[in-house]
Length: 544
Ligand code: RAM
Image 1: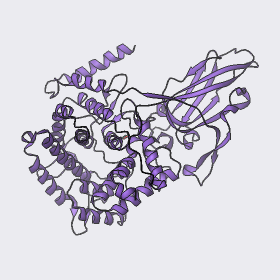
Image 2 (image 1 turned 180 degrees about the vertical axis):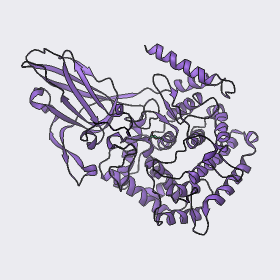
Image 3 (image 1 turned 90 degrees about the vertical axis):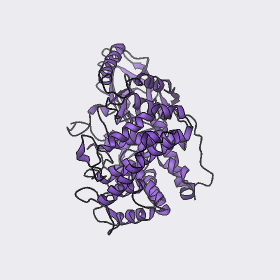
Image 4 (image 1 turned 180 degrees about the horizontal axis):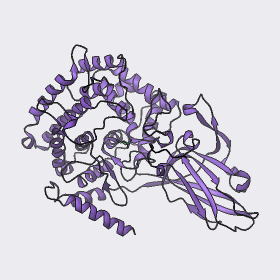
């Protein structure tokens, strides 16, 4: 069956990729082989639960719920499940992998199959909100981590086939067989997996405690997302997105220092690029690596920055030279959105322009900033590779985008970036205009400070956008403010009990979910691991 699925995917892919005009037709197979050669072996570890717990509603807790210890795991083993009915186990930390358990008959004879229900949750609230009825505006019901196992016989080991990402698991009976039958779960363990190795870059003794906790939670987040690719979230979406990968590669450089997964990701995207040379925004690994039918120009452009950073980190010129032509294509495609005045215009093509999860965000100024940021980095890449002649027009393009962006989106009088036809003020637009070099550091500091003080200013809606805001603050010399913001935002999550950082976090709205249902949020999400990078890359700011 697996072979047939693989063949179907291969044929579908071949159909897509063999079309005329494909700039990479001679490279794809070789690139895919390189990606597969770089596939890491997963490190596995057996983990045991640390406590039996029960959910307690408590308005003083984050999202209104906490767990209270009710006993030791040994209280479960050997005890007839009939008297237990439902039990919740706490493994003490976030884990990714497979649960195994052993059952033992304690009374009677099994006269019908036994139904056991397992529900895995990353946060307390994941296990207390009812999943049904499943509303239409949510993502697919299949993302929820609940499984019913029907056991035809007991007194055996069972491993739940689906990989789970969780800290808490509830086990309950879903209807009892007849007669006086009873059984016990007499042993249970979880096989946790990650491709991350040992932490290579540790913090100095003198690191302030809260900063240390932020770093450690960031490292755990990254570790859990490092599987056979950089996953965005091991619970959801369990796939490789360029935007997430950029931040993971950055954090990896300042923690595990293992660039192999970055190399694999770069090659996977190159091998699976669309036949017009642009990159898909995300890749799903199974049953064979394939692109999701999407394209985010901003993500495609950021792929070039990952390649540049990878070259600078590793000195691996062979890979960078091999993939250079892909980088050029992303800039070529990005420039099709730029009008005759050097201004990024989203209406010039069909694409998903993604900057942040914040609803209603105007993306014009940010898109301008990202393209220019990537263009400068790609020019740097060209210079390092001795390819300037191939892209001799880049310096003039850089000036054109600088001039056009400044004229279109920077209000000099107010000292503020105003994005799009509605002249929207958002922090992320200020940030990208700084990171692109359109604003000087002094102008950037003024713009960010003014935006903070502007009524109706659109705040970042995710740790992803918050990353770029902090980076822009640092570039604008706002060291103290950057430190305070990072400490408040990520430190706030630590104080609220996160042991991995989530996809979406809004301090003003604890029940915020981009998917209209909090348990759908991914609570271990790659793009929020970047304090790892900030703390180590700017010790003079964060380790004082
Ligand atoms: C969601 C995920 C992912 C992100 C995309 C754009 O599906 O949060 O991490 O990169 O959106």
